[in-house]
Amino acid sequence: QVRLVESGGGLVQSGESLRLSCAASGMAFRIYVLGWYRQAPGKQRELVADIRTDGITNYSDSVKGRFAISRDNAKNTVYLQMNSLKPEDTAVYYCNAKSLRLGNNYWGQGTQVTVSS
Image (cartoon, rainbow, N blue to C red; front, side):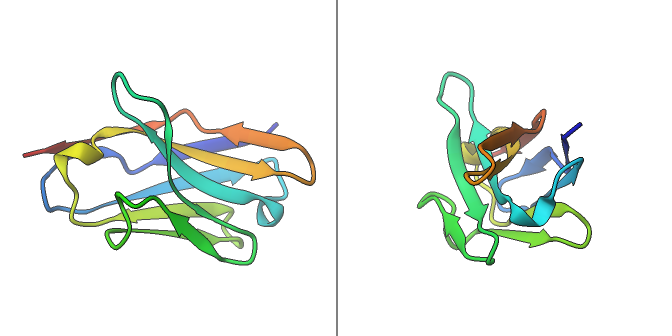
């Protein structure tokens, strides 16, 4: 059974940092593209960042230069380091793992990030 479990969310003030973690189990972690998405109240879920199997990363314009995604294949974990947080970063953050080759797409349960001004 595949599981993605996020942790590290919380309440911080504007300008502070948080690091999210997503621990995966039940899957061949290294062959998946891993991503972090977020969904704010009343808005659609959007891609924040993803990282390919070769380590190539991609970021939304709104977080470029502030957030960094990384993966540790030995620990089956993907991270999102979030610096210089802004109130508009407030959302539920979801971990995603997808494999086009296998046709699989998995989601975590989400972790709340709240940034106060």
